[in-house]
View 1 (cartoon, rainbow, N blue to C red):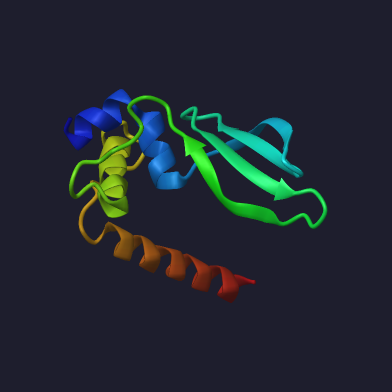
View 2 (cartoon, rainbow, N blue to C red; view 1 turned 90 degrees about the vertical axis):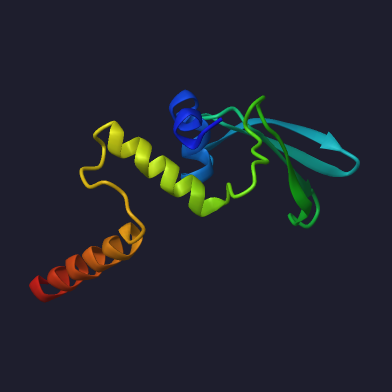
Length: 124
């Protein structure tokens, strides 16, 4: 599926890949002397499972995830930058951003943020 088609069909998946998940608590369970904390993304439906030591408060290992059908992307070249560009194109087509994304979009955004910060510090 092309980037444009995928992002239009499942903008929630693209949003989570670009902006990260919006985790909400979904449950807790005792497991082998630890506490399993279950989180669910309220945008795309991904579940995250974290195990915590109940004595020390240290997380055991890395979290594990259960993704909704269609979320995983194994297409060659679909890295984080590819997803950012695809999502920016989607936002442009929907009228959320006014300038068409380009290769130097990120560079221009940084310049604008720095200029805004300099103006604010000069005024303050």
